[in-house]
Amino acid sequence: MMIEIRNLTKKYRELTVIDNFCHSFDGGKVYGIMGENGAGKSTLFRCIAGIESYDGSVVVNENKQIGYMNDTPFYYSYVTGMEHIEFCLRAKGKTISRDEIEQLNEKFALPLQRYASRYSLGMKKRLMLLTLMLQDNDIVIMDEPFNGIDLAGTIILRQWLKDLKAQGRCVILSSHIVAAIADICDEMTYIHQGKAVCDFSGMSAASIEQYIMEEFLSHLS
Ligand SMILES: Nc1ncnc2c1ncn2[C@@H]1O[C@H](COP(=O)(O)OP(=O)(O)OP(=O)(O)O)[C@@H](O)[C@H]1O
Figure 1 (cartoon, protein in one colour):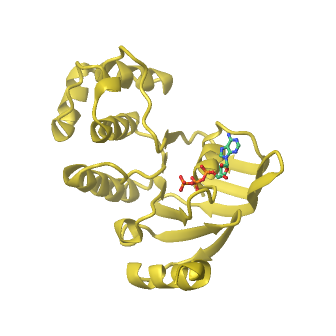
Figure 2 (cartoon, protein in one colour; figure 1 turned 90 degrees about the vertical axis):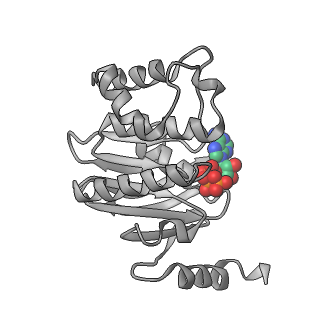
């Protein structure tokens, strides 16, 4: 077990975003979290990553390091891609030589000497991904990782997810596009009104979409 969440509740004043959420996450698995806009996916991720206060308990297996990728890239002005990577590695107590960074960057083709704040959206996402890969975390949480990346980035990301799984890491990610994650995820969860309401294990993307439409989005038809 990598993460055990018990009765996680998160409120913003009178708004209950996460309501008594319970879930355990194992190594060697990829978990997909779905839910409508505002359902609380990002809030849940921030609570697990320890950057948001909450009620209840989130127990992370001792000595396991969590890496978290936000859904919206942010880079400080006048910081190059390389400087950003080095800063994020130092924050995790890791040092990797510039040569090794450049070597992994061959896949991403990012101009690491340029200011990251001036990259395109897709390049900013690629830099987040490259940084996370280099950090080599045991638990990887990614908020909307497929959003904004191109086909090459998608291929790199999907391959990396398979590698992480094979290495026994624990991956938790969110996506609004069921087909993008259905075949990679071992378990998919739908969050509705603060609760995890469904587990779609073993279902195809088309049948998951159909189920969600009928159960939760009937107002659209
Ligand atoms: N810092 C905050 N203060 C007050 N309310 C917040 C704060 N952060 C999030 N919320 C509210 O919590 C709810 C859940 O937001 P969250 O960003 O977790 O949803 P989400 O499922 O990630 O949505 P999306 O799919 O649109 O990214 C929303 O109603 C949002 O307005």
